Length: 364
Image (tube, rainbow, N blue to C red; front, top):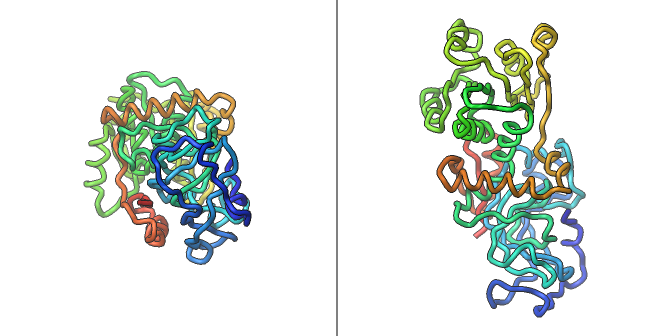
């Protein structure tokens, strides 16, 4: 994992040009701009835009020019100090993004100058204009997809992909039910399921633009879009006369929203929790657990990546599959607001509003 304290080393960074494979002949900066936090707390209090040195520490490093990096709720949680893992302080913010390799050490053969790469692990620190890391800290992605698709590839689409592949065997005609269906993961679930021939029942909160939201999700391939209140209506019984009960439930909300999914699952089904946006405990109805034998699981994409570091082909296969979906128009670019890197406060503030689009920092 890239160790941030190397960036703050006071020794003068040295680049032996004959030890690097360079994408183009030009002079390189010895420092870059980065969003740094030295303590945990509200982003407005702890996050600062600073210049930091770029350490050329050896011939097995790669030098990356960051292109774009989204601001996700998990990034804000990390700044606040209440995420599952926390980097050593001081740290650079941001866990997801895409960069272009501009030079590599002469010992690096797996990655070439000119390639786009995305970080493998959480805590990389993508909110910066440039970075130096080891080749095994990133994975190449195709350059024939959009910068936004590449920058937002490694969290939401990967989470959707793994949950649909790892917990139950889904076949055409099966059904998946999910809450938070308008989230980034939810939209990816809809599109991947449509490609698999799997039906989706998509639960969203009631809102002022409900009709517009339903049409948007249907355009992605959603079979059924209903509100939380409709889960209690008799319409659900009529729905299951034409579609099988779900064998997989995906929960990112928690609280009563998660509890309401249980009564609609088929016997022997599985519910996977990957978020808790309501910040409330998930009730587990004993009747469903006992008589329907429903299995309860949790999922965290970061942990999956760490568990599979010994077999990078799994990650490469997943990224390749998702990239091919994007290339074929089967997985659309998420709706995003592009924000210049210098206006980072705007992106952080917008991320605090659950009803806004994802905001992506554009470095150049």
